[in-house]
Image (cartoon, rainbow, N blue to C red; front, side, top):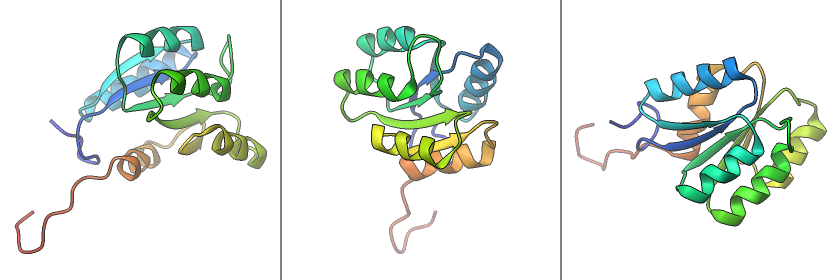
Length: 136
């Protein structure tokens, strides 16, 4: 069943080292129809992307074994078309600029606002619009 906000259910790689944040966000994303593969380190995320394809990575920037900017380069070496959202405590303008330069499509600062995340998903994976003259 597709999410109420996106075109289809997504396969999401969630990279977050804080266990409670990882579990909560995974649950919220699963509840709206997405499949979530959680990872608590860059190394775990890199292993997951070697075994399956993802539509999106949502990644913290400050990870125990790397940073999210370097991790995205590594992930895109396996899957160049991977969409990416940074979800981090790094919220200064320079941090946002660096995320953009690294290839993140969006940058959210913690604590995240759930409506903003859902809107971001809909922006990256928009639902189809009904054709003119057809019922929604």
